[in-house]
Length: 148
Image (cartoon, one colour):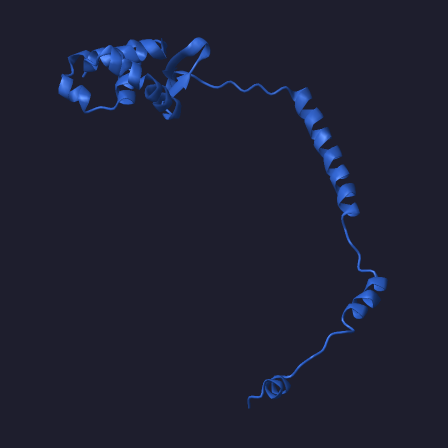
């Protein structure tokens, strides 16, 4: 069923992004967001004040909906019509591999600096810290408090 053939009640049952999807699907062309939302408002017979009040929410809705993609110069279209092109240049990839190898060597050298060894000299200092320590048994503590 085409969007123009749908009743107002059927359109009102749909969300704005679903209506926008149908509009873009039927038109087959990319559209500016303002024109797209104006068409949604026309189909739902919304006033200009409602258009102005809801255009920001419509933008956010399209931005988070994975079915849509924002193109250059503010145009929107269905994501299914566009492909992402990834071009790998072999020379750049080789350079990156060499850089990664160099970086891991540097990291290994840096980690050597962070390793701490237990010095025997520090062990003697730690005994001095404990020389004033007094150990009290529970029985001794009870006697001092006067309870048994």
